Image 1 (tube, rainbow, N blue to C red):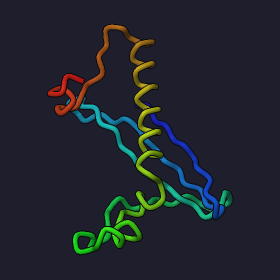
Image 2: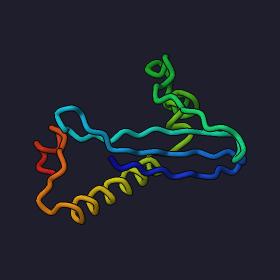
Image 3: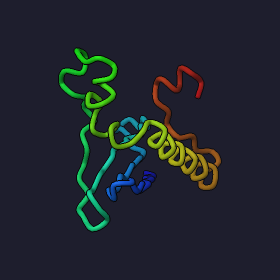
Image 4: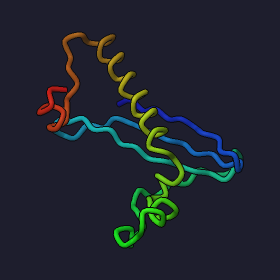
Length: 117
C-alpha cells in the first residue's frame, strides 16, 4: 500500500493536509482513498474534514453552493490540489510496480478495465 500526503500552508496561518492512499479490496480490486485534514496552526492537532455537501445543496443557487454548499473538504482544498496528490500517488505506484516486479500488474477497477486503462 502506498500513501502520499501534502501539507499546504494557508494565508490565515492554518494548514491543510491532503492524503491519498491506495487500498485493496479482498478480491484485490485497487482503489484510491482521499481525505483532507485541517488544523488552525502548525502547533494544533489535525482534525478530519467532512466530504459531504450541505444537506440543502440541491436547493442552493450556484453562488450559495460555491460559498457554503460544498463539502468542508472541497472548501479547504481545491480539486486541483487534491488531483496533484492523487497524481503523485499514481506516479509512485507505477514506479513501484515497474521496479519491483516486471511481471506484476496492479489490479484495476472495473471502470478502468472497461476503458482499457
